[in-house]
Amino acid sequence: GNTSLHYAVSQSNWALVRALLSSGLIRVADLTNKSGYSAPMLVGLCRLPSSTLDSNGEAEDSRSAARDCCWPRLATSNAKSVPSGRTALMLAAGHGRLESLRLLLQLGADPNLQDDEGFTALMLAAEQGHLDCVRALLAHPNLDVELQNNEGVTALSLALDSGHRDAALQIYARAKLGGRAGNFGPANSFAELEAELNSFDDGQLAADELSRTH
Image 1 (cartoon, rainbow, N blue to C red):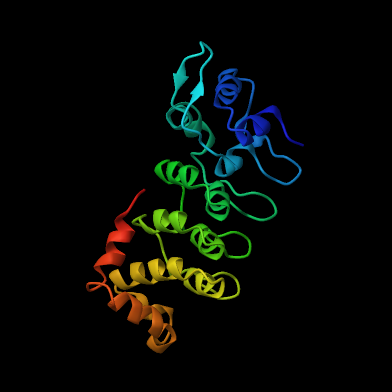
Image 2: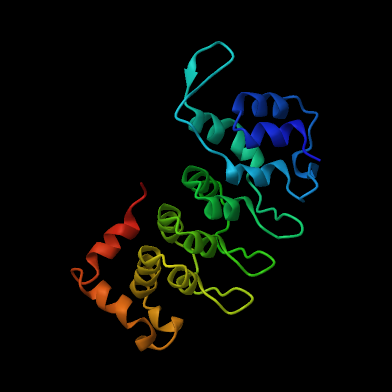
């Protein structure tokens, strides 16, 4: 059920994607494969190399080409796959595609959307230990770190249960900076995280980490 656009996007062949989109013959949102994914959803799995070649054999920045020419047409919606209900941002977060995740956020992807099991992009990144993706999501001003999945589990708990302490600390620090760490549960439940955070200069190191974009 994959189309030429599915293949072009999944292979990060932006020259072909641009040509297909420019043809005017493709209705992007309608092209879903047998797994329920449209081509726009697959942008979350893309790898963005530092450079590629255009039709004249000249080097161009692949990230800029994707952002300026292709992604605005592919990734402006928060479309969900069927049946999982996952978005392109969720795919990027769960697979550690940091550059794709950043571009999707720049284009307006909603970090608080939840799939059919209640998972958010932050939960998926935290569970897999993709720390850079966790940091990028935490830098989003509208992110809700307290969301729970269908089983009542938060991103913080997923990070801790999966053994990704650095990710858990970042999430806890973000919640504390917003004065909402207590909403995760009794303070003694996170005593070790609190102690580790307090070992920094009043949490300054954690705050510095949260402000990092690279």
